[in-house]
Length: 146
Image (cartoon, rainbow, N blue to C red; front, top):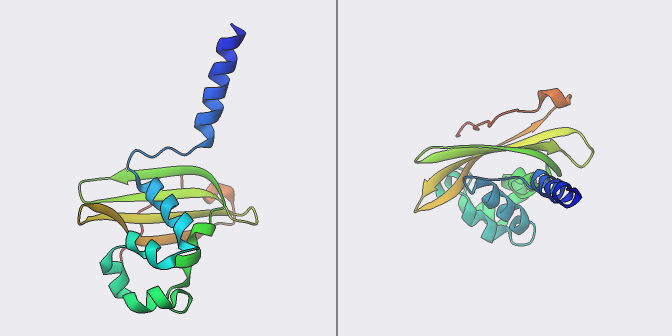
């Protein structure tokens, strides 16, 4: 009986600490997050051409801080992830990651994805900072496309 209890407890703790993604959006976000700090140009391959064109693709690749600084820094907004929300249809979907920033303040990142050339690419971003924890999103938020 004790063995079953501990095994169940281990499974519950393991599942609770790892966000789960049914769509793959969270995995793309994590890939961008791990790549952007070391290889910004490769990370931009996870972003739609439409988005890059709006913000001048070549300038974004060579001078990201001058033209659109939060693309390089947004993966560090939610340092302690608490929850992940997703939605998807045939051609688009959204991901919202909620938690706290590096100072322990409530924050969220929402990303819209679109299917382009058979891949799910990031198309719009929204960062939220909140004064109170109860203002954090409790469901997926789809950012407006510029």
